[in-house]
Every structure is written in structure tokens, then in C-alpha cells.
Image 1 (tube, rainbow, N blue to C red):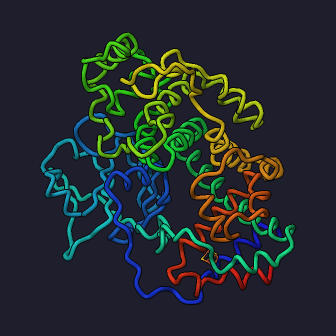
Image 2 (cartoon, helix red, strand yellow):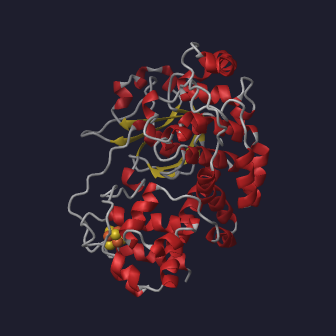
Image 3 (cartoon, helix red, strand yellow):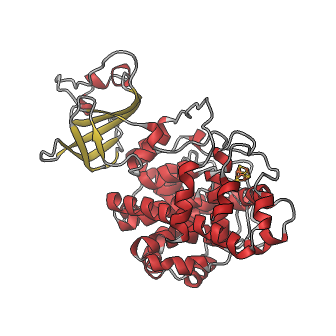
Length: 451
Ligand code: SF4
């Protein structure tokens, strides 16, 4: 049995007892839509009336007023797929509350998806009184929402047993967790590829990685709403559509510093604004503060535009999955404006800045390039295992403190590997974030002894 499979087995009994109170997190409608479109709920469902529902095509985000997704196709009870639109609401009653039942734009609805059913039975009907199949999504299937998302940054109960284990054993456990993580990511990306095609899966996954932790949702929505093919053929240029749909080109009052750059982009966006405005990412989804200026989301959007521009090269890099080639490509990415600006309106910096830094490239390797390569060929695990880490991040540091204690020389040596960092994060998510007992009920220390 591989170390990855042994680690998966550990997860079957991760705490001694479940905590009594579990309050599921509420997802916003935007989060639900992003998960739905990514296929995170799957594509086979049972309708509220018991019929089998297969989503044959998820369609595209709707650019016009009306349902959320158009050009979708749904098969009921194995019959021929029916093409039409799909509406996703938080509450089934939103269909009436928002006037969809009287709106002709919803006449072609083939599915009404929602996450809350309310007290009494509710039928989804169109203006012509046609019943629309309903699917109630199981939000708990989406994620094993941890009861303790931010465990305290302090040494945990497994510091002592980990210290007792020989370093080779510790490495094996961490690599087992890393392999388990890689397999899960590979499966998620393979599913995304099945739904949206290999190119869009790669592009969407790179966009999500560029969103860092705090802007994953707006980056994912943006990439879903502006498919790769559309951007590559955009007359206005990919930059104008990306920044326009991101909602960062609301005015033509440009500061003198950025006037030339912004004017070009703004006129490209202006020409297509009416067509794409409805797809604009809501401003409140962006988290613009609290991060290093170098990591401002506008710089990441510029990197996404460069990725689109160099797509043929990106596709070739994905096929080879050669870390040196991928690192070189991103190191040489250059943009006349963004090489010297933190934001669209900031003053120019005297020093050139890399558009995508080394740490982000390692994240892309760990979260996108290697999982995609592993989905096709499991021997790619060996390459991933040997990938060196760049810098660590705050989550890795907290996880290291909990498992190894402060200033651990062993942790410092192990964490030079990107795979070990990923394994440590997996243990942190699987055990520390699922423990609400201050380590008392966590089984990880005992399971270590049996490894
Ligand atoms: S919760 Fe479990 S894995 Fe995390 S530090 Fe405590 S004992 Fe270790």
C-alpha cells in the first residue's frame, strides 16, 4: 500500500468523538454558483420529485438579464438531453420572489437549483405554467467544513510523538499526506476538464491560484465568466475584458501616471461594455487590503492576461510539466506597465517587479501543473516529491508550530520540500482544523505510533 493510501486510511477515524454542535457555514449565492459551475456538486442528481437528473452541459454564464446559466443541457431519467437555461437560487421561493415565474427570459429553464427548500412544498413553474425540474443541492457534500477553521498558533499534542519518531518515518507520514492531497487535487481538476475541456480547466485553475487565499472566489468567477476561447478572440484585447469584468475600469478619470495605459484599455472595454457588463464581478467580493502591495489583485489580473496572451506556450508547459521550464517562463514574463506599478493608479516604482514571483510559481506547480500531470500519469508523483519549496507561508508556519513546536530544526530541514509543505498543510486541515477539543480528542498522535 502506498504512503498516500495509508494516510487516507488514517482519516476514517480522525477524532475520538464528534463534537456535539456542528453549525454548517452559510454559502453566498456567488460561492454556490462558482461551485456549481466547477462541477463540485457533481453532475448526477435526484430531483425533488424523484426523477434522475443528469447535467450533460453546464452551459455558459449568461451575459443578459435572465437566468444564471444559458446553453445548458439536462437529461431527465435517461431521456434525450433538453437544452435550455439553469437558474441557481439560495431559496427555492426566490423563483417567485424575484419574478422569474412571470419573466419570459426564464421560459426555457430546464433546471431550478437551490440550497434551501423552506417549510412548504413549492413548485417551480414558468410563465406558460410548465413545471421545471428542481434539484436541492446538498451543501454538506461540498466540503467537510471544519469546526475549527483557525486553530490556535501553539504547539499541539503531537509534538512529543513526532519528536520520538525517526526522521525518515516523519518524512514518510508527511509525504503520505502530500500524495493524498495531490490525488484529491488531480481528481478535482480531471472533473473540471471533463466539464469544461482541458484548456479551460487549466486556465480556470491558474486563475484561482492567482487569487491567493483572499481573492480565490472573484478570480474563479472571472475565469468562469470569461472563458479562454472568448478572451483569446477578444477584439478589445484580453486585458480590457479582464479588467472591465473585474470591475476595475469604472471611470475615465485617469491619473496622469497611468493615463496612456488606462486610456487604451478603457476604450477597448467601452466598446464591449454593454455586452459584458452583467458579468461584472461584484465589488464587495474583492479583498484589496491586508496583503503585500506586490500581490495586489490587479497585478494578478495582469498576470492572467499574460497567461491568455501566451496560451500556446502555457499549454506546452502543462504537457511537459517541467518545473524549470515553468519557472523560467514566469520569470521572464514582462509587461511595460505592470513591471513598475502596484495598481492601476499607483505611482511608478523605481524598481522593476516580477509579475509572478517564485512562490506563486511553486503554488501553481503544486496546485495545477503537477495535479494535472498526475491525473494522466501517476509516476509524476516522483517529480513532485523532489520539488524544492520556495518560501513558506503563514499557514505552513502555524502548522509547523503545532506539530513540531517552536524553532524545530527538524521542521526547518523537512520544510525545504514543497511536497512536505503540502503534506503538513493536509494534516493541519484534516486534523487540527477538525479538532475542537484543544488536541484532547484528536487521534493523530496515537495513529502516528502505528504508522
Ligand atoms: S489537533 Fe491533532 S494534529 Fe493538530 S496539533 Fe493537536 S494533536 Fe496534533
